[in-house]
Every structure is written in C-alpha cells, then in structure tokens.
Image (tube, rainbow, N blue to C red):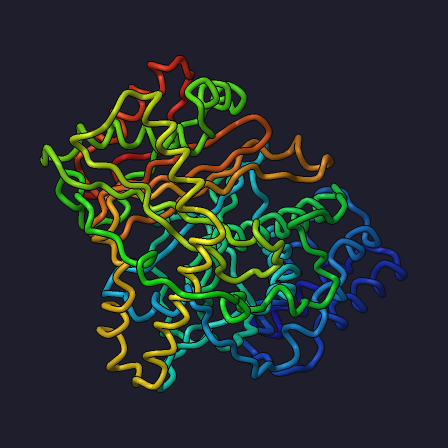
Length: 499
C-alpha cells in the first residue's frame, strides 16, 4: 500500500479509541517510520507487516498498551535503518558450494518445528523481523569476487511465505535482495531452508530455536534464554561469526582426505529433487534400548540398518558403499560459531561382506569412534586449509574445475548415502508443551539416490529419508528392518513430488 493508504489504516486503528490510546498508536508508528537507508518499497513492507500484526492483536482482544509492548520497534534496533557495508569471507566448508553448483541444483537443508497450534503468519513475520538482526551473517547475499565468492550484507526486510513448493527448492542468489535462506510456514509447521554456504545444521538450529522463542513471546509466552537460543536484544558476538577453520592447528594428512568411489543405489534419478520425503517417527527410549542391545549408539544402529537395506538396493554383488557421516566439530572445543563447522568421514562396507546385525552395529560403532575422532577430523580440517591455500590465487572463473578436483572427497560420487544426526533438541520448559516435534531434511546431491537425517525432541526421534529416485525400495527396506526389531514406526511425509 502507498503512504496515503497506510495513514488511512492507522487512522482507522485510532478511530473510536480514547485520546490516550490514539496518541500511543500514532507514536508507535512514528517510531517505526524512522529515516534510514532502506528503499521506500522496503519501508512500506516493514510498515505493512507491523500494521497487520497490530490489527491482529486488537482484533483478538489485546489492549493498545500490551500490543505496543509486544511489538516495540526498539526490538528492531538499527538493523534495517543503517546501511551496512560488511562482507564476510566464506568459511572453508562453504567455499566449494558456489563453485560446485550446477543449474537447478544447490546444497540445501531444512529445519522445521511443528507446533501444537496453527502458525499465525503475521506474528511469525514480526518474529523474523526481530530475530534476523541477531544473525547478521545470515542476512547476506552470495557475491562473486575475482578469487573467491563471499557474503555481502543485505539488510532488507525479510518476508515470510506460505509453503507452496517442494522442500528446499534452490534459491536464486542473483537478486540483490535475496538472502541465502527462507522462512516458510504450512499449517502448524515453521521451516527454515538454508543454502549450505551460510551454516551447517547446528548453526541453523540456533537460528530456528531463537526464532521460535521470539514467536512465542509475541503470543504472550515468555521463556528464558538458554544454551543455543540467543537473546535478540544483545549485539551479535564475534565468537558467533568466526571461521573456526582458520584457527585450527595441527598437521595435515592427505591419507585421511580421499575415499574410494562408492557404489550407488539403483533407481532412475528424478527431474525433481527431492522426489520424496518420508519421516519415520519412533520412541527415542525404545530406539536407544534396541541400539544398546546390539552394542552401539543410535547412530551406529541406524547406519547398520541403512547398510542392510542398501544391499537390497544395489545391482552389484560386491564393492564399497560409503555412507557420509558429518561430525560437529563444536563438540571438541565448545565453539559458539554459527558458521559451518562440521567435517565428514565415510562409514564404509563392502556389500558382499555385510555381517549379522550385532557384528554390523559394533563395526559401525568402531568406525564412528575411530574415523570421527578429533585427531582424524583435525587432520582433514588442516588438509582442507592446505588445499584452499594452494588455489587461493587462481581466478574464480578458473577455480571451479580445480577445486572440484582438489575437493574430490566432497564429490557426491564418493558417497552413496548420508546420515546426519543433529541429536536431541532442548527447549525452555515454558515452550515444550507448545511444540510437537522437529524435522531435519537434507537434500541429496547427484548422483546420490537418498540422504538420511535424524533429530530428536521430547521422546520422539524423527529419522528422515529424502529420496531423489522413483525407486522407493530403500524406504521400504529400512522400514522392514526397524519394525522387525520391535520398533513402532509412524510414517509421515510425501513420496511423490515428481518423476
């Protein structure tokens, strides 16, 4: 709406109210209408967002003072009003992503929280407006430099959207105002989809949890700041934006870097990626009990189930199959960085040598401990830095093929599947009864037919299979094995996005 239409709406809000309330409403929107560097279209968008939320509150019986308290423009700080010329170099894990993109493909992941009640879009929008200031490194666009891509600040007003596309549809990074993440909602579900250049699953989860705390505050449900939930009224901290790869110390070791190519599962790759997302919801305590019965962790048990299922989904009777396992490096040093800070290793088995389940779980437990150790991961991190330095002065237009070869271990042909476990999500006591579950969706890269992810909350574990093929045997095979062990598995999702 234009300025005149906006003022008419404000006058309507003031109409019939006491002189004191009318004065408060006028002062509220005057405070919101500060001068700054935003284009007029962005100012209009911000005003309309707050106007819609203001009207929502009044329509639902809140008085003017309480409405202004919840929507206080002070929570915006100066984020949208002061132009920022900040830019950020990509962290070592993110460097390869813009170089490796092909048309229509992008390394994306989604984090979701499904609430007990339907999402109120106008309040989610304000929660995002308030939250994004605390994450300036996320409010950026990808730019192409002469030697490397980088992130440039884009303090434009974000827009929450109703979900209408397949999960993790690639984001256009060519538009100046397009950030490398999106916030969407569908009925009771709030989702954030990230271009992996910004952060990893752990960093993204901090953003989602902080956004949820602010959303519930706007609903009148206050909760304290806790671990992995940031206070949006505080200034961003340097430790949250550090590139931990640059601070790593130790020796590199090329022997830890390269894996043999992996077999790939059967099935024609679909034009639409993903072609299906299927959630297996299980009782966490029961899943843990069964995993321990076999002598391993939940991650080791699920890796074993994945390998057993894979044997039924590959044509080859022998050969190595690799399942990529991300390792959150924060667990080794307590880092608070919100940027990518994960390394990877391959859990590997020859498909002709899959043992009984007890032996397989124990083997997976051994590989998790040995290959995922700090020593091995640190060697790989140092080797990554060495390779980056070796191509630092190669122009970006020549760098893509060089980096893709140098980063052979990141090539999707090296892996056949992925299992990424984000662990147990903890929320403040005040919010637990309002959130049903969390989900984690990680998009397969070509030529992988599937990726798997895992996240737990309040006694529920959600194991998700994301497929990129019309062949759905892997989903059925894993379901069969989980239920054979006595697990009650509730299935939810879609297996027909495209062919």
